[in-house]
Length: 92
Image 1 (tube, helix red, strand yellow):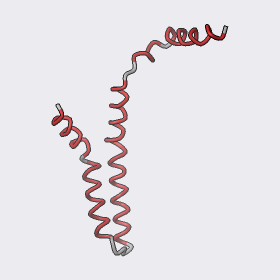
Image 2 (cartoon, rainbow, N blue to C red):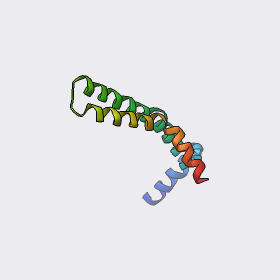
Image 3 (spheres, rainbow, N blue to C red):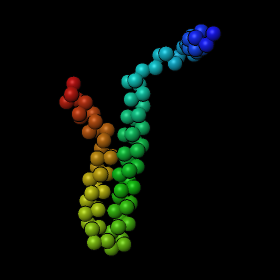
Image 4 (cartoon, one colour):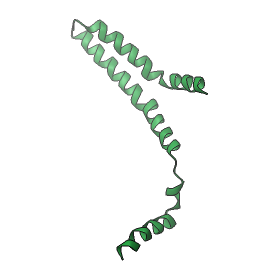
C-alpha cells in the first residue's frame, strides 16, 4: 500500500500545481544574478567605503590603504553590471 501512496502524491501534485513543472534553472539563476548585482554588491561597496571612512577619521595607520581598497571594491560593486555584460559579450 505504501508503494502506491508516494507516486500517487506526486501525480496529484503535478495535476494540482502544473506551474511547478515549468520552472527552469536559467530563470532562477537570472533572479539570483539580479539580486546579487543590483542589491548586494553595491551595498557591500557602500559598507566598505563607510568602514574605510571610519578608519580614516579614527586615525588608523593603514587608513590610506583601507580607502584605496574600499574605492576599488566600490568600483567593482557598482560597476558589476557593466563588467558582467562585457564578459557575456566576450563569451558570445
